[in-house]
Length: 352
Image (cartoon, rainbow, N blue to C red; front, side, top):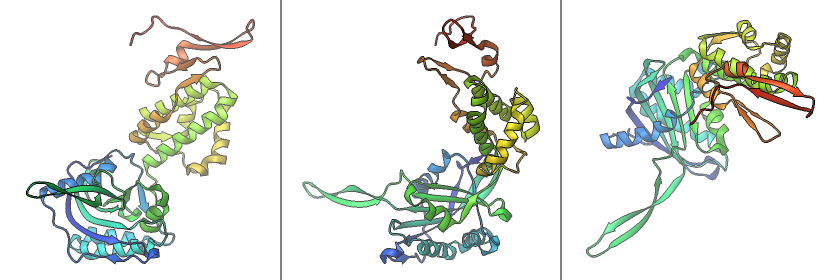
């Protein structure tokens, strides 16, 4: 969990990076940019707002041979070790970005490199390196006062309500390539920012494994449980799965299977499905890990608890009260109508 409320921008350098393919230039500043209180407040909101509402899916620097050969890892490490080197290091970062800006679709823009302090990550105070880029310019009007009228002046500038690209490199997990959050509003060149420039891969922590395992369970429910059982059991399996994750701090696969699969014949089906599909979710060799409450909460929101019937009737089950569906809903077959039915027990109708 991150908290950016008390974050301070301690040092900031701004450069302009053109599109190398189009012959545009790289312009690096000779000094850092001083910030008064008003500008600090505006830029802090501009830089950090996209990360406050972002699901925490971390990345880390990755190199096939050794992290010591990773340019961005070395640049971040240099700033963490010597914050006074930010200006010189930021020029190297800008040059590195310029070298990657060789596709016709890449937009030119300003790159902001800053040293951030007082960030909270998992209740620990840390510093970070922020790298942000503004690309899309918007038109706005300025007015010049004259003696008896106003003159309109059309200008272009950066919209401080929308950051185009950004990355926060937290000074934690240095040996694993740091923990990194990234945002990109312009998805047409995502590989350019994440892969070519940052050179990151997904950080495999508890958030990653919790999210991937629950997604795997969701697909197992749809592709195996539903055909073998029925829609109710598909929904109830995911209900039990999410509740198992919610009430435990650590995941153990054997305990999970015994608690969530009421039909023991589905346990070997689950294991076979994991062998076949596990690599797709990066969980093929994973059977235990710490559980991330943040990932469980996010997964719960995305799981449907509705049974849609071909008679245009919906039955919605409540994941908060996990026993209700099993206790008060029964499925049967009506011989006279030659139709399935659901029998629902209740004491009174709730008025909402």
